[in-house]
Image (spheres, helix red, strand yellow):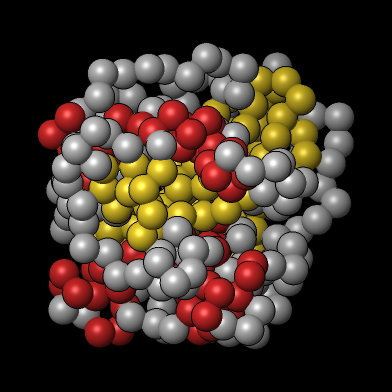
Length: 306
C-alpha cells in the first residue's frame, strides 16, 4: 500500500456454482520478519453453510482479528495474502477479486470541497425493512445489501438479483460471529453474481459518496446509529444503511432498514458525518462491473487486473 496502516479489511468475490471453501489469510512484515498468519475469513456459499465462518481468538503481541478486520499494534507497510482451497485446486479459478482496504487510524480525516452536482439527486433504490421479519432486528446489513441488489435488478433487468431479506440473511450468516453483519461476507455474496462486484472500503469523506451518487451508484455505509439519530449511546451501536442521494441543501438521504414503515429518511449532514466516522467511513461498494466508477485520486476503490 501507499501508506503505513494499522487496520486491514480483506474482501473477495468468488463466482457461484462450485461448492468449495476459500480460506483467506494474511501476514504483515514487521521489520525484517513476517508475522504469524491471521485468517480473515473462510468463505463457502449457501444457506446453512458452516464452513463459511470468521475465526475467533486470533490475537498476539503484533495483531488481533476483530471478526473481519485485522488490527495491528504497530503500523506496517507490507502485507501478503494467502488463498487456500484445500485439495480443490480448480476452485482457484472461481476467485474473481481480492480487495484490500488499508487504514491509518491515527491519521486526521481529510476534508474536501463538496460535489454539489449530487445535491438534489436521489436514486430510485427499492426500500426494504428489516423489521418486517421475525428475527430481523439484527438484519440491517443483509437488508441494505438486498436494497442495492434490487436496485441493480431493476436497472439491469436481472430478476435473480432480487432476493428476500431472510434468504439474504441465511446466505451471509457468520456462525463464528453468530450474526449477519460480517462486512466482507455481505459483499462477497453480492459479488458472487455474474458481472457484479462487491467489496468493503474505507472512504475519505462524504464527498466520495456524492461522487458515487452522481455516477448512479448507491452505497451502503456503516454508522453509529445513536449518533445518527441523536439518541442515547448504546454499546452495540453499529448499523448499516444505504446512501441513495442528497437533498438540495446537502443533507443525506438514506434508505434506513430499521425505519418502519417509512424506510426513506433524511438525516442532517453533520450528524451523518459524525456517525459514519465511528466506523472509519466504512462502506460497501456493490455495482455491475460495467458501471463507470467516479475518479479515484486517493486509490481507495479502483480495481486492477493482475
